[in-house]
Length: 451
Image (cartoon, rainbow, N blue to C red):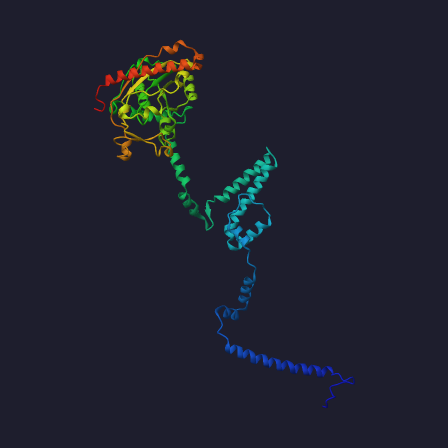
């Protein structure tokens, strides 16, 4: 075939010639590519584990490629998925949808029980806001609450209907409020259902009364005089001296009157604020008859014709050192005198000897008292040297002397309570009567304080 055999009249190549030339070029290129692949295969490293698995199983390789090429969630979406679900979420929002989708891919069983109660709670809020007093809305709200309770506190585990859900029950033993509730139930077990307005628990008081009577007769050996001056009925205000670090004087006066008064009248005494703020002690004395000291409480008690005891010395009385025992301090500003004048209550002076020797006060420490909520920390022959045993009172001998009602107050009416000069004069007169009774009580008891 000549050179011009594959050309037409215009000098161009015919289609058959162009096709034959293309096939020759393709064969040459394939041979060159095969040689290059063989050289690269000889120089390449052996196939790894994943490559070998991909070569052996093309379907697995395709799935792995799809998972690898799938876009990873953003940092914002991952943060929302790790954060705790809100109490009320906006159902249908795009952010929640992204978070739910990512969390469902990670752990579907963990997310579904959380978002379903959220939707129920959102529907519940919608029903409540929709109409007030609507019976249908209340019914839907009750159903939603029941469903939420069933979802949040299931009784069965996902492993099977017969297997109890042990993990939530085990977690409750690690919570502090579980033990607080149990202690509260134990404390309420023996309490009476009938408690007066000031906290007196008759059932508890009757249970501990034999113990206090034993302390009164055997340990402190209390002797009382003048119990006949206490009226059989009606209100009366007993003005007493205050001594002892702990309020044993009010408890013993109440117990002695119960034992020696012909009508066994119950006494309510006013205690300082720090006693009620002390752990356990405040609740204890309140349950057995103590009342927090203030004018309003005393006036309400006298309005109920109660027998009330007050200690006008206050903290100054219990803070006296042992060398100043039975020396009365100032009786405040005469608040008890104003109270007696306003309510027309008779005032009866009372002297208590023996409480000073229960805790002989040698020194007062005030450095940490404010932090502990007490006026001072006492230093006695037994405390703090003996630790908790130092809080036990010493077995001193007690003498209680009750005097005749003060007649000076009976000459004035309620309007006299606004006369400060008269109130101070009557206050000093009552204080002098109590001091005179203290001298009588000390003489009756004799020099033996503990024997």
